[in-house]
Image (cartoon, rainbow over all chains, first blue to last red; front, top):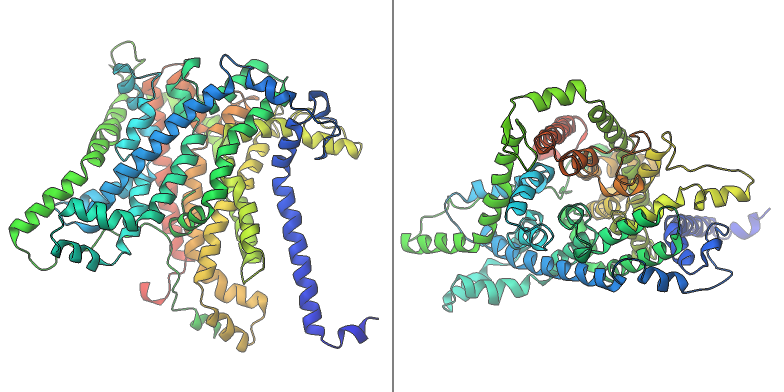
Amino acid sequence: MATTVSSRNPVLYRRRVSRGAKHLMLIGFGLVMLYPLLWMISSSLKPEELIFREPGLIPSEFTFKNYTEGWTALAHPFGYYLWNSAVITALSVVGNLVACSLAAYSFARLNFPLKKLWFALMLGTIMLPFHVVIVPQYIVFSQLDMINTIWPLILPKFLAHDSFFIFLMVQFIRTLPRELDEAASIDGAGYWRTFFRVILPLCTPALATTAIFTFIWTWNDFFSQLLYLNNPDNFTVPVALRTFLDSSGESSWGPMFAMSIIALGPIFGFFLAGQKYLIRGMATTGLK
Amino acid sequence: MVDSLSLKSEVAAPAPAPAPKRGRGRPRPSVRSRREGWAAYVFLIPWFLGLFLITIGPIVASLYLSFTDYSLLDEAKWVGLDNYVKMFTEDPRFWASLKVTTIYVVVSVPLQLGFALALALLLDRGLRGLSFYRSIYYLPSLLGGSVAIAILWRKIFGADGLVNAVLAIFGIQGTSYVNNPDTALSTLILLHVWTFGAPMVIFLAGLRQIPSSYYEAASIDGAGVVQQFKSVTLPLLTPIIFFNLVLEVIKSFQSFTQSFIVSNGTGGPSDSTLFYTLYLYSKGFKEYEMGYASAMAWVLVIIIAGLTGVNFLASKYWVFYGDDSK
């Protein structure tokens, strides 16, 4: 059949065909993976009654009604919940960056009594299921009258509760040459100065990874926000979405999809902007 | 032949590194080391506050509470082992939640890791557009835990959802998959498998650590693609597989959001999506049986520690750490 063509360079020919097939497969599979997301986007732009009549991606009729309707469907405009989420998320990022980098510098560079014990404890808390502390934490926060405030959500971040990030930064600081610290010390810099002027600037990639993951995890976090925020005035995006689902039952999927897409927007944005750090952070430490 | 080549493994599992081996070094002037010690503890102040106030303190308190009857309003009443006994002997929902979670973990984690590994293998070896594919496959793991995606899932598998809309094209009329006790859990498993991107990225990093000289040597020895996979790739990748396995088991045992949203917080239909943590939540924070919830939390810790321990023990038989660790 095609022997004359392929016999000129059968190996190359076969390789090109198999590579093409591979790409086709990967793209096809990627499309299947992303189809639910694309379908949600397209559904949010369709009139409600078309959503389940058209499994395809291109709406036969465009409308932004779902967005305007969804934005005002709850007690507050949706922007209000976005703002609440943004405040908690921003403070969590700051808290994690400050507290975890301080602890990481100490573990990675300084010698002190009982260091091994503390380090082992720090590693141990990474794997600890948080359910084992959640009940007493809740009791304490409720006795401090902090339910329905943002404190239970951000205070742990300022106390380096996410020890995972300490570990990430310790690993990173260890790769920095010690000569830098020594040079700074010869120049008369103390520990604080060394930390702020030498270590911290060089840690930017680890700090970026921490910031991005803290952002995504806090933005997505449902359990603790559901637990600590019961007043609609304090609702964040995930809790507001849940209320939306509760109140509208099996109806108004269009507006719900529209608000879901708005909720996912910031994560998608950070994903695009910080992909490099995400992938690197994942690859070196295996976080998610 | 090929096996002997792969003995000197250079693949390092991204597992937690051992504690730093310093401190026993050369003795220093004591003033300086004392100053260093002080500085170190000052840097650690926030972490220490956290460790004692919101980790160790609550751990101790929760252990105590697990032996009490406590509802936030009254004083905690010591009941000994009652919570635990009740859990194991009189609480069918506890067993249901354990069963549901176990099925979820046992089915979804191997599937997820299987996809992750397969895709990582396909993407390896200088494929053009690698970073593009990697992003596409990775994206769902970032979004998968959110309420928004759980809402989407509920609708995809709902009575008039996407799945049934597609089936309708072929003339098949389906029912709601999330409202059917036989299929509800499968939809959550599917959601978990959908997030295979994160372990895939870790696999890709691991694959890149395997020196290409191993493959060259193997192919000189006449090993085909399959043989190369079996003798080079797989053994050298076992530490990464192990790492992903431990991590995903721990994580998926604690899944919460998906089942909460899909079942409206009930774990229904007929407890078919009652995840362990969902039951713990409703016991502790809906019925305010906080002693019971604490006991459940401790059982969870023991289960997870046990599973991790079993994983580590079993790893001796299949994880390959290279020659020097023997």
